[in-house]
Amino acid sequence: MTTTTLDANLVQDGWRILVEQLGLEKAIQFVVLLERGKGNSVKEIADYWGDASIDEIHNRVTAWRAKQQ
Image 1 (cartoon, helix red, strand yellow):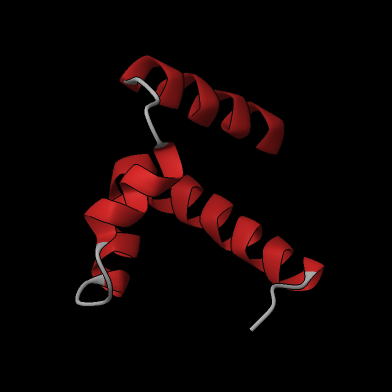
Image 2 (cartoon, rainbow, N blue to C red):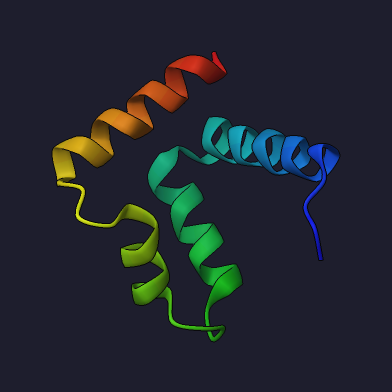
């Protein structure tokens, strides 16, 4: 299945609303609960972030959040 711009926008809007309503930590917990039991989340996270340090990840998330506001 291919992701369309509408799909990507819906995901972004949904994530923004989750974070606004639940806060970042609870939003992540919610998404993890939805995905529990599917695939290898540790590998997926490692593949996504690669060798990025915690500071690099924080900076990327902070920059993304700033663009959303």
